[in-house]
Length: 556
Image 1 (cartoon, rainbow, N blue to C red):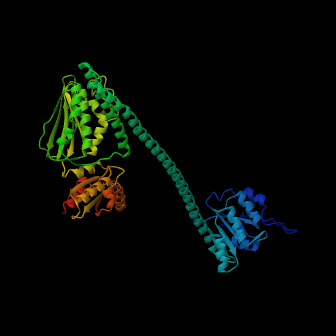
Image 2: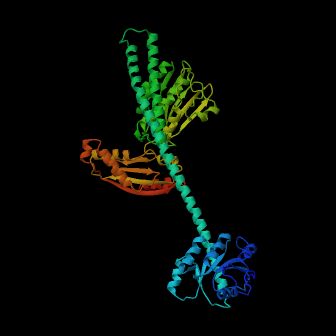
Image 3: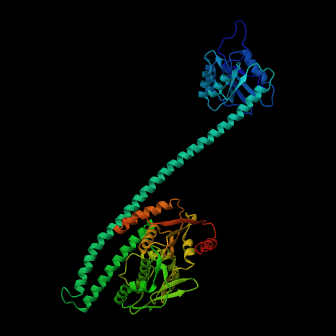
């Protein structure tokens, strides 16, 4: 149905002697709602200067279940004034008006309300004109003269539905664009923050390196002069003086160790600390720290017992890092002992776990259960010493625990207050089937995949070329990766970062190694075959990945 109170916005005066059949614009504005129809009807503005055509439109809209409220404007200016005051659901307009004609009428109406559908009333039957009408911003066009037809009503209702869809799409698009802008701004801010943090981290690392260098230089001079005095080269000294100078030298070594701890902690956090795992002899690892620990034990009057040489399989580890861990544990054990205490360094072969256990046992003060969780925390020293002068930073155990993890092991503790403590860690046996699953357990978020790559040299390569190949792959391997040498010419690399540019990485490493010596520079290109062998998701059970890995490396 159509509301009988439709009104005209005609600015033409009524005929002389006759009363206008349309109410005045002021009366119409007072009667109509300000936004659409509150009862779910449609508010339609008809812009038509021909009263006959307008009445034909009104007739076509007379029947229907949805109420339609018509407003009539006889010029474009009147229509624009009405649009300033109210919102309509649909606009029906003629192209030829007293104050506008052609496509300009559509463009000006579209410019005033871009979210309201415009239907053009036209008496033309020209495909070109119709196409231009749509390009100007109209949603559709209605031929005039369809008396008694329901097509006009359906066209209006469909236009409202289409425009609602368009408006919703525009709203969603604007929200998406706003979200995209916000995300882009947040991304740029995060990038700026990351760059700032990177600069600060680099500055801190450079500061630590420079401070360490600046401290080591005078410390070295101090040690040299103290050594000269202790050895009697600058004059005779008594036993007590020699003992005090020996303690000063040991404390100077402690300062060097703490500087190493600070630098290593920074390198570990930034991923710059190198790790080079390879087969090592356990007795050689212990011999490398024997003299250092003997000096420290003698200063504290502590008996140091180091297990004699026993037959042990080769260990797969970074020997230098294992030595650092052993020194840290043994020095802590010596400090925890009272005078005439006892510290024992022992080694065992755990055949079941395919690992070698290296431990340090003391009869010192021991550690309470509530304090054990603090041991690997930085700067924590929960009752590890009986020496009131031992006030160095407690970074040692924190780094030792991380070194154990890099060596595919874990730091363990058994202790009773007053009865002493035992620290021990395990390192895998070279060639053990436990190496890969231990490394696999270290991989965690945000890592999602593990890739296995094989590298092989031609069997005819010379020993020098094989050595160059080993150096190349050592340079290529990052700390978070696992490199295992299967033979003189075969290596397996497990990595948690899938890279499509493996060839580029090898070429870069080759170029770097080629610059190391003139001999390598003469033959920079190494014939290394590269073959990606497998990719596993870390969501796959570890046992399943390990089983497939063992099948690959065994050629099954």
